[in-house]
Length: 274
Image 1 (spheres, rainbow, N blue to C red):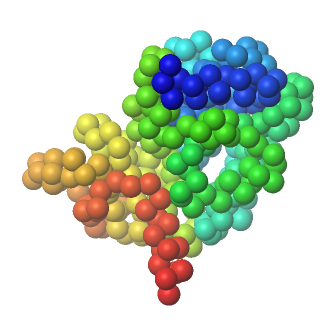
Image 2 (cartoon, rainbow, N blue to C red):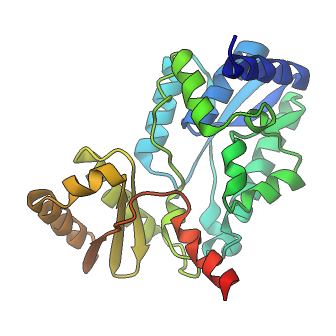
């Protein structure tokens, strides 16, 4: 038995000790592994809840439900309304705190109704290295992160998911569409719709890991470093530029640093330096 298998057994033991849990399920690599193992260990005492809102693309929600159905995982779907919260819509660096506070509060209420003592998310060890104010909401509301508690890194989650035959083992990372909007720019439905369409177009062209960052009239595209050359090919570049302009962008740019998580947080680091 290697180290990853030992961590998987540790996760099973941890979930068994928890006795019952409501899991925030998104259909991503992390939450799918947690959901699958929790249902294996706890059966109906593990309840999976998918929150849908304007900040998540319709295609992502549909794919998450399809994944769960294929794995035989029952999912409860709820609607959340982050944009109705002025503190969230204002898009300060604390945006994720307000979002997660509402979500975890909703999950905790479901747990109380069903007699389940814990709420859990899919955070892992690597998440500790990024700016995640949502973690403060989790701490305040007593939300557990079993994957992190079991010591799983993102790479290990992908590897154990592959071994278990989970289709999400190589699913590209995803974050809500609000993370594409610079802090201080108000989050509005029209911007989210534009971003959803822009990223869907890039994915239809075969780009897997993409982000379209919204800077007013400018769209800043991030793709994996290995895919930059393809996006810069004349035919592809022209198609992307034309499509993005129909969506309302005057300028379409390609970020030469490529895709990376939390790129919008660079302004926070710059502020600390000054």
